Amino acid sequence: MPGLNEATQAIKKGDFETAEKELRVLANKNDPEGQWLLGLLYRIGQGVPQDDKLAAEWLSKSAEQGNAKAQHLLGSLYAEGKGVAQDNKLAVKWIRKAAEQGNAKAQYSLGMAYAFGHSGVPQDEKLAAEWARKAAEQGIAKAQYLLGLMYGKGKGVPRDFALTARWLRKAAEQGFADAQYLLGSLYADGKGVPQDNKLAAEWIRKAAEQGIAKAQYELGSLYADGKGVPQDNKLAAEWLRKAAEQGFADAQYLLGSLYADGKGVPQDNKLAAEWIRKAAEQGIAKAQYELGLRYKEGTGVEQDFGEAYFWALVARHSGVPSARGLAESL
Image (tube, rainbow, N blue to C red):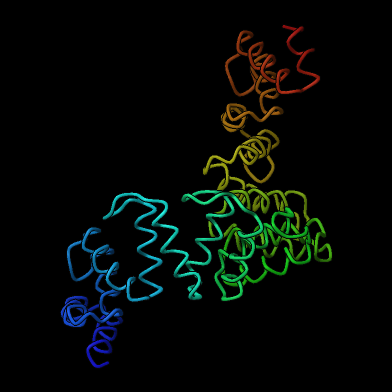
């Protein structure tokens, strides 16, 4: 269709005003693809003012004619209450219609709804896995990750770490960071794949470079221990800092320990105490005990027996056996 071709070419060039004109002509002729794309322009506010209500109106016209992409997006609008009254029943109705036509994104959305029992459907792990598989087989990375998790936990499918690794690898190879991290963890533990610290480090690094805090922590730990990578306290500190600055408590504690020992960073008891405190405040038991000791001895902090006693009690409550002796010594 000439008008549609011109519109799609204009969209590719970023000429949304031309695209809108062409699409409006098509939409007014009741063309479902034109209606879907015009609705999308209103949804994202390109070539027209952003308007979820108008988006929903055009998407509805397209969806009623069987356009799966419009059905999926319309279902999402009902789920979020954008441009239409929030309605889980209608959300699932339209998403299911799209999924049954083979729309991979809708299949993933339906799988997520069944996995967690939201959007008005009962939780059903078996149906979640079925829909996730359909989307995963069409290359949707999020669905591949979800299916991998389900095999790892035995939810909706038999527990099978080999299949966990298979699906996580598919998502990881598409750059899905959480899948990269978990695939690295499987290599580290030898679950579903041969144990291989080098491959573990390679996949964990990919996730860390995308900003995943737990991957940054794991990579820092690998450098600290020399597992799968050369032992390097400086690189350990660099990666731990990235995770610690995102609030990852274990990384905060380990970074504090590096400052305490002067490993990979200049020895600095004040900075050690600051990072250990952050971890302690997030409930890391060994950090709570360490902070109590520091207050007792005045290491990196001003000596304060009241604070020392407080953190000793907190650490004892967290299950640190030696915290009782610390509290009794104060």
